[in-house]
Length: 227
Image (cartoon, rainbow, N blue to C red):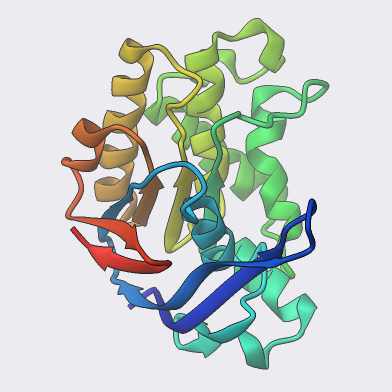
C-alpha cells in the first residue's frame, strides 16, 4: 500500500462571508502499488483539495494520512518535505517548467529536494533515459519556449518521475492540450505506470480517460466513493 487516508476532513472559510465550508468529510481510502485511479466530479467538489492532501501540499483538519506506513501527523515539516520529494511526483494542468532552464535541467531539478541527492551523473543518466522514453532526448538542451505544448507537458511528466516516486498525482494534466496531444499524454502516463511501477491518481473531467483506470472515485456529500 502506497498511501492510506483515514477519516480525513478538510474545510475552508469563505472569503466573502467568513462562513466555514466543509469540502471533505470523513474520507477514507487507500492506493496500492502500481494502481491506476481516476478522480472525477464537478468543479468545486474537492478534487484538487484531495490531491493536495495526498501530496502533503496541504494539511488535513483532522484524520490520518499515511504514506508507506508513515503517519504524516507524526513527521516534522522537514521529514514531510523529504517524504514528498522521494515518494510523490506531481503533474499539473500547466507544465510549470522553468523558462530559463533547459529541458534536461528542468527534469533534473527535483533531485535537489532530496535530503541525500544522487550524484549529478546518475541523475543526468536517468533524466536522459526518461526523455528518450517520451521521445524528447533530441530536445534535452532546448528551452521550454522552443517546444510545443504537448512536448512541454511530456517533459513535466518526466520531471515528476526523476526521483522514482511510488505515487504520481496528476491534476487535469490534459486540460490545456488538444484532443490528440491529450490522448498521447494519457497513453504515456499509462505506459509509465506499467514500466516504472508507479501508482497513478489522475483528476479528470473526461469520462473516456477515467474508464482506462483500474478504479474511479467520485464525491458524494463531501465523501469519496467508488463509482
